[in-house]
Image (tube, rainbow, N blue to C red; front, side):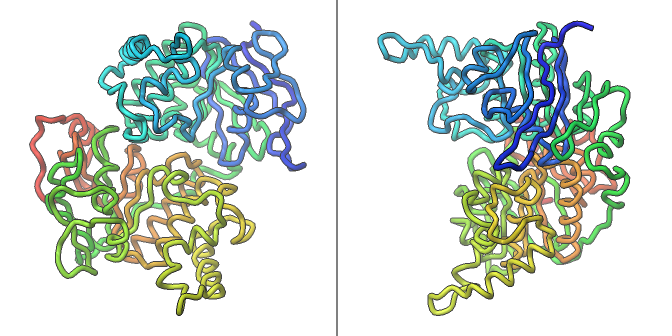
Length: 507
């Protein structure tokens, strides 16, 4: 056996005496893509942070290239050729694409930024990775999550790299962008770069990974050649239960009553979109990154200003575009954002605070005084109904798993009895078992008569959760199908329709 590029032996990490990683042996060979799987809280991110120098091990040893490796900080790991791309993006929103690509090593002379040199380097890098279409002068804050993910990955790959750690790199990417990323990774393989690929998407793991290691409860369950084990076997190793015990067959709860109607809505890239969603119906919205999916939800919810068109719900007297999210909430709408940590939650606050946040003013207060007992009782009931796993309502939301954080956001809106729920990538960054629980939650919401819009870049998720699907391309609707008539091929063709495709009428 040749010496591995990276190896750790007996690696452990405790926080306040509580073990989160226990006696883990793990290695990555040169030119290998090694998948690291596990449920949320299994220790995957902790292991990657130890390797990247972001935290220090409590016990155990690490080797890089055969020599002792114990980085004191991230920069020291980077100098050794270890790069990491985090699940939660670490770009600086106010800086441009070019500045983020070379942050920490910007070209300077006498303390002054050499903008011409920066532009040249950024242009070369973007062209190298097939991202020449990105405006390098645009602030990162103006980009969607998928585009930001591509920028962060490109920035990591631009550095000297022997070992690359990728934590959920495809969670915000569409199928086309995933293929682009996989092309980059295969190129790095040929150059001898070792890679750790953390993902919940088992189909992608099967396609790209040479070997797979599963962690459960902070311990290594096993390592195998990816081609030798099925996805079901991986799920069983991660959860300790059969993969067949998950989501049951699809049941439609669609009713006759129209709960949401959108007519000719335009906002930014979104151009004259019309659609209807009935009570109990789950409408999937898909398309490539940059197609306008998130922008459509934001325009419906009043988070972005509509330049044309209208929205109407059962609680409205006449159609109009919402001028703010507050107006949308009053009309019975709610939105669960793609980036729940940045846009949907107050991470430094409790489960109680986050759940009751939108109801304090008009449900849990009387004569200007907060009715704490009523607030606590209602939140407790809602969290129990959604099976939010927390120690108590006072626990900080940041300490919850991704799936439970998502449930807290949903619980907030159910307290207001919202009629229309807009979900943007509802299972992004959530493990396989938690994903099944979210799907069961969507079932329950539909059965209760809620109208649900689900933006997803995962076709299998659309197939499992939706009654109907529409496709956006360049901000316009280019296709609409019932689940009895849709096909992945037709949806893919509509996703690539581009600017020349005729718009679809009211769907």
